[in-house]
Length: 95
Image 1: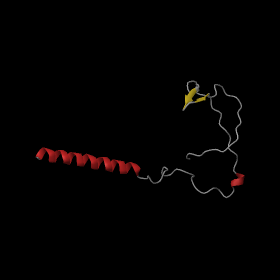
Image 2: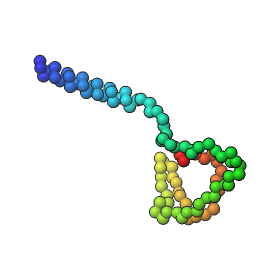
Image 3: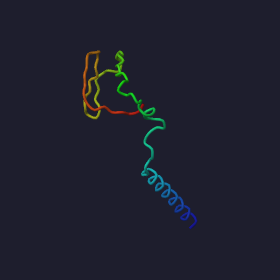
Image 4: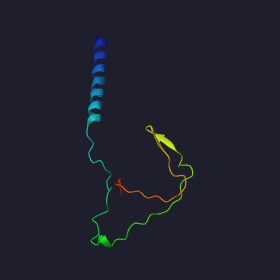
């Protein structure tokens, strides 16, 4: 009788641990950003007088521009620097 009682307690403890882990995994995480991430402050009052950004030309990394496939889609990075112009909507991921 004592062995059966011990086995039940172990099963109950494991079930409780599993349930707690499952519920914790479903909980929402607050604040999906890093502290201090984002703009440094309000924009300057004379924003129209701020000079346009100038791109910095950097050489391509010799080992990082090989063609690759990701999620069934083929990508071919530039192998040499050549003029490129793109229009569209940009994403922002931090400062």
